[in-house]
Image 1: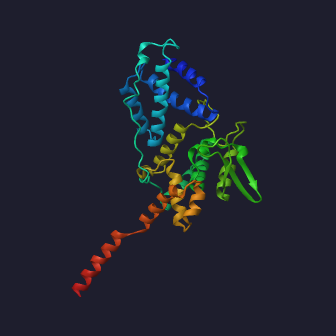
Image 2 (image 1 turned 60 degrees about the vertical axis):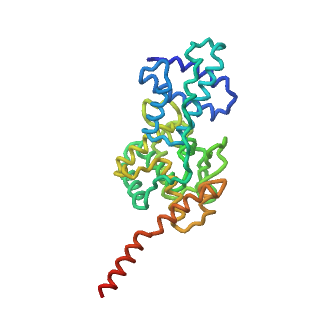
Image 3 (image 1 turned 180 degrees about the horizontal axis):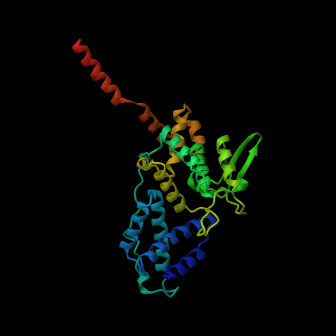
Length: 315
């Protein structure tokens, strides 16, 4: 299937919306993922069950509940647009039915803490990625993981980063980042010496003029920046190759790992809030609760109590 009937409608839908370029790109990416799924499965006129299957497939690929909910909202808005503009656009009667109506967003439990890497696992991952470097892609992967583990940046911030965002302030190299919901790179993270070396090693291999800091090196790369799905699949493969697949840690889990390690080293809750660039400290509290749970050892203490009491009775 060369072109799906929905593709020109997506173009029309986005052209009719008054949105920023960043939002336009996000909606386009989300809708294109859906259309590509339909094309791969030879589905011309999808049913509600087809959308459900698509969402389940995305979750099996590592998509979070937040991203799944974003896809649901985007598809709901898109199909509502088609239904309301059916006659104006001269569409088939099939678009008079809102197939997204039965599909609901999933509830998000903000108290559920996602898996993180231990200090030993983080060291294992970085050591593996560093030692295997041969290609530009492998130098890139090492630099990306190093960046996310030590600075706690989000994957979207990694994908948005440009070469010009690397600046030296006195003797400290910093990376200005465009945070979630931002339209410009107005915050920054400090780059440790080892990470600076990893980034420079990667950039030294590039002869392109692409402005983005991290890019795809496949012949099939069609965009100047890395896609969200690319990062998800890349990290999943890296964890498998490094022997850490059973940890269930996702790319976003590196941010959780960085936050947890910051608290474990003795940093305050406020310091961690600033490190993660949270607006509200309540968002950071979940990390403090997680660390407290890690440090608390009721199981071991109960075992010692039982064994010590038994030992006293025997003597």
